Image (cartoon, rainbow, N blue to C red):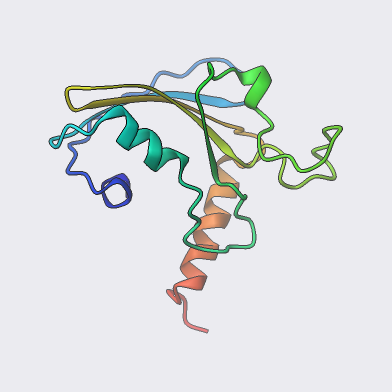
Length: 141
């Protein structure tokens, strides 16, 4: 999917390391690409607010690109639409994935991302995929 979104030809090698954290998954991603984009080019793509689908459980924005250091305590509840924070009433709180572009050098794009695992989580991701499949009419009605 990232290849289509960024119009890149990329080779994938994924490694994971589990850590004991109650809330929020932080990922550190390094993508090696053939066409060596510039930092500004990647930053511009990440800051795009384009939302190709309007799905019922889709957060708006689905992703927020930040320039400051990504910190769990500051960005865990991104997407919230109410102040003060009340996730039991604000169904958008914690639904936005936060991304910090860390570097783009010699065809290597590095970024850090944070999503709230207990709010969106795997089950919420599957619900979002089911909504997308329904919208694209993958199911017989």
